[in-house]
Amino acid sequence: MNNNEILHKVDNNKEILINKMYVGRYLNDNIGHEVINLIKSDNGQNYIYVNPYGSMDKKHNNKIDTILLVRNSNIKDTFEILAQAYDLEQVNFSQRKNKDREKQLEYIYENSIKYNDKYVNKIFYENEKNEEAIYISFRANKVKRPKKPIYISFLPTTQKDICDKDSKYILIYLNSCKQQNNTNKTNIVNIAKQSLKMYIGNKEIKYNNKIVDQSKVFEKLKYIIENSDYWKKENSTKKVKEIIQEYENGTDINHFNIIDIIDKNYDEVIFSNMFKYIFSANPKAFCSFANTVLKNNFKNNKLNLSEQFNIEREKGHTDLLITDKTNKNIIVIENKIKSGINGKDLFLEVKKVKGQLYEYYRYANGEIFEYYKNKFFYIFVPDYSYISETDLYPKNTYKIIKYSQIYDFFYKYRKSFENVLYFKEFLYALQKHISNTDNILEQTTHKRFIESIKSKN
Image 1 (cartoon, one colour):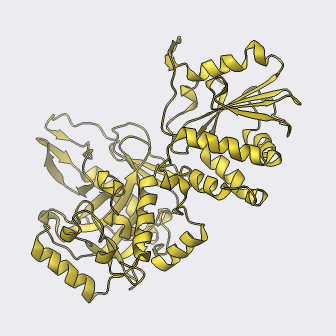
Image 2 (cartoon, rainbow, N blue to C red; image 1 turned 90 degrees about the vertical axis):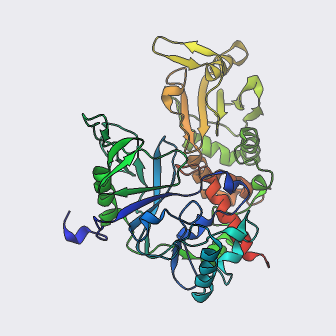
Image 3 (cartoon, rainbow, N blue to C red; image 1 turned 30 degrees about the vertical axis):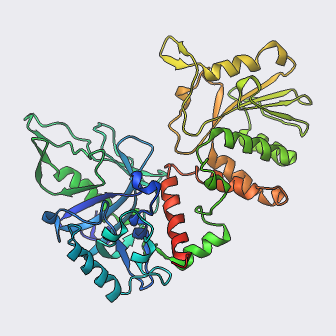
């Protein structure tokens, strides 16, 4: 790497802080304080709240070079980097004592730290134990988002990093190194399951009665942080006014809808019912969806669905069964959000599989459907789903259709559904599942943040 490619130089004598956002039971009923991390305050500054409690062990005071703001991904011990914050000023040295909280409030009022003309401490007024809260840990002069998704994995592995320019994402294996011969010393860095922050230095530390050499992990993180090819040039945080505009126009993913109200964002029955309703509401549009997105089966038989199709729920226990007498088509759709493949165990030569999809396959190939010569089988899943084609049986039968494919089609042709009741709610509900990460907690946190700002309290 030459000097022209360095975004900013990481100080080898300081630490990199990995801070997990949008996790924990606290977010079930409260606004996560970390919501401010990627939002610009009214005074044009970016402030960072370090999870949990806004505080750090005092031995790390003034030693943080860069903060990597991360969230969980769908892969074990692997996290997506949402942004890096650097050029930092630590503004909280608190251990959550009353005198430290008073200093924090003084800092907030002296620097007029507001979001849409509301002081930051007032936004969280309904939070549990708000009277004890710390709101700000750092002021960051620079907050940069990645150009494309960046994942860091703590899984010990011999796999190579994915970091070429043509890949859709970057995946760096931090523990791609072997255990030292000395059993009391290791290069493997583990991130604790319950810990929301982790300090990585260019040094050895003692952890669980072992000496952990963090230097190789530090170098890998340093490479990611410094590489300007990975990061947007501009500070990409927005002020609340811009976010509220997107929110009210319905162009933002955090738009409030009926599925939020009834708390059914993961309910497969609700989504299957919505699919039936929307698919039936505009037969011409659904035929276009079927013929261009579902498209074909593993035998490369092209799907040519007529508008005289019939769609049923729970027929033979299938989520959606679509029959088309005109063109002799039958379509089986299984919809999965959080659950995996169910059913009785089937013991194959290679491995054991669940028989749920096989039962639907047998049903669609039974005598009662002998008239239908063209058979098509699909499974709808969110983009963050762990289900892969190797989980599906019979082999080379079910095609995986991601929610983003469904969303993209219906968003593109949304004008055809202008008169269909609840169509916008359908799109908003789908939109929450089109990321590679299940980030509904993040969306809920942002929604509550905006609602609190808009309230008169």
